[in-house]
Image (cartoon, rainbow, N blue to C red):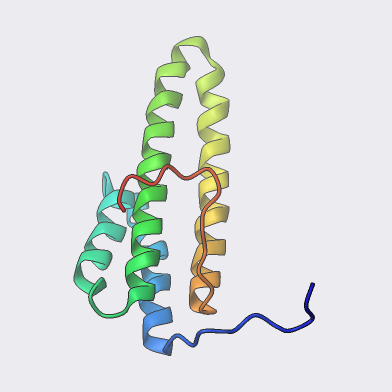
Length: 122
């Protein structure tokens, strides 16, 4: 193993900010139905050609929100057997924490990859 640091790619402040907005746009879901999907989709579509970092983080944010929406749908179905209530609460907390972490990492210029993410948008 070498002790040399990995090369750091520099991402402009504006690109980091738009990447962060891609992640935080999921909070539109707290205001509008399906806003958690539409927020990242709109920001990504507007700014994806601005910088490759914004494009990558926008796809990651959108894919995560698609995954969360599908998991929430499963939780709603499981409410018939009561466990869905607990799972939906847990899903909400995990999604909130991961979106905040992703936004912070993107603002630092780090290429963040969500765990438990089904990557449909390539």
